[in-house]
Length: 511
Image (cartoon, rainbow, N blue to C red; front, side, top):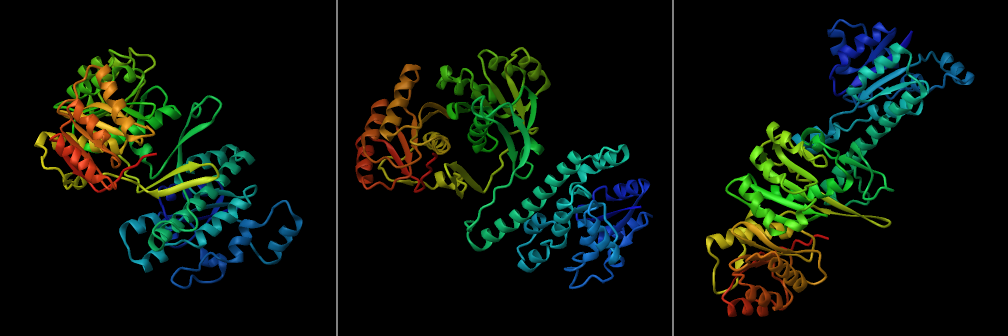
């Protein structure tokens, strides 16, 4: 008779799994709560103390760290000396190990008590998982309740091949690696401000992309905390590597305004249109006016529900991607006319943000890691007026929109907003004055009137030249971080032109 060791924190379907193993000729060995649950269901199971010949001790800290457990898992069935050793010591082989680990993540989410957290660091579990994974040729290692059916089918059909066992082995080491990474990151967060000597970035694969940025590169999407699995749904088409980057940029901007009817159009990672409207159709119309040429083939993020009337208007040009809170069935039918259009939704009335607390970027030879940046609502509301003239309520609203969009756009960046719609943007420039002037030149080419608009920069203006250019175009309000050694010169320029100028005191570079 084969023997299975079951010791799980996540007890989902463990009774059904144990019952099926018994039907397939397995004898069950189990621990603690798992043993109680199985026995209460009427399934015969051996308590782990009968195997170890030693009671649990130290409040459960030691119960499976024992040669009768690990010897039964680790001995190689193909080696005569191993078989002789276990026979000599009366060790019974364990042919299947089903273990998942103490809920460390759930513990740190519900308490800050360090003693409680320490007690929820699993010791015996990872040891059993690693032992079984090491001896995967002889032992099936199961760490995910979602795999129970596949494991049972493999056993019943005789398909528990080397390849199948190897896949379980890899998953087991991923499981323990992710677990240890979580603990190390937590400890560094608690004691080293998140910047310890090691940094672990762990994601779960969601899907392959057709390729990476270019056809010769492989690509895939990985997620934190089931963000995409729980929210992101593909309705039409296949998201490419580049699509996902553009979707990320568009969603971050469109969703930055709460439940407002916001629309952001992105091309190659940069916003070419943004607006907040009385309704989504209004917002889309205004966003498209900013740069309809660049919007061709772009990614559109809709902070709300796309209905049939909005879909009809969006179908008037070629778009590559539409991402929204939801897209109605009627709208999907309309979009179906566009063969190359890709549709995605979050399954809610608005776009969903992950609000990751950390940010990182690959550089050659490593990566740089930092706290995630965000613009808080009070940051704009509490910006200090430094000019004689104060902005009107509408100008302040436009300034807030411009400031948030600028903060989420590649530096150097200058954004102009008028009546809640972006009318000009200069981004990714090597000088701030070039960003300001290029934006105004593009607006002029598009026939857009920027007079009366609010201008925002994600970093300070080092000279007054950008202020002079904005004044010449009719800009009435400016918001920027301030902090330049020439702030007085910039303030003087604003006063000379009768402009309202605000300093937020916070820089938002995005490189």
